[in-house]
Length: 210
Image 1 (cartoon, rainbow, N blue to C red):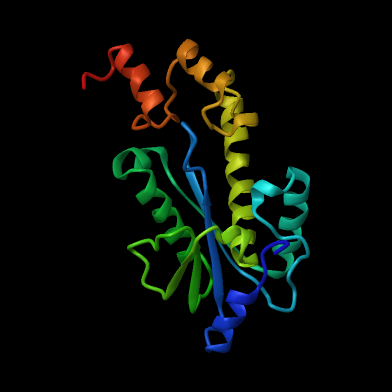
Image 2 (cartoon, rainbow, N blue to C red):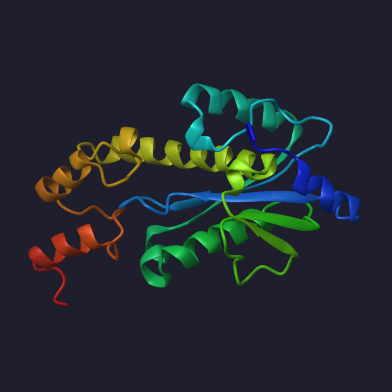
């Protein structure tokens, strides 16, 4: 298979579930910043060419596709904060962001396709978990693009406020330069304290006792 397609969506539409939303998140792995999710309902008659897992696309191509999507698809983006990540753990926070993105659609979808192997437990809409969904479903691919662009923009903004961590290029992921900056510059309010590299630095500096 060359890339994602619309087969899962067409099967659901044939069952009468006309509004199918693809849902994906980005930002589980970073040490800093929110986790971001998007929900996208595509128009079957207006699906941009070249939709794929956002990680397989250049930043320029992602931006081009998002512009096309914005003209003919419904897009909702939502986040879970660093505080929520630390309080309820990253998996639950990513699911919370997904639930918020779905709730942000103008009209509730009839069915959702969720990237991954778990359905958020707070979801009250029929759903299917699709492993490697961003490489299988164009709706999920579209959601991965929207979520990544939105989160990258947040991290670029935070990079201006907290220079030295390289968030404009590493998006908060634990690159060597980010780890080095953490050790030299310390922990910011946007770092996830429940993540081991951050927690260890706080312990070393005496901010955490256990």
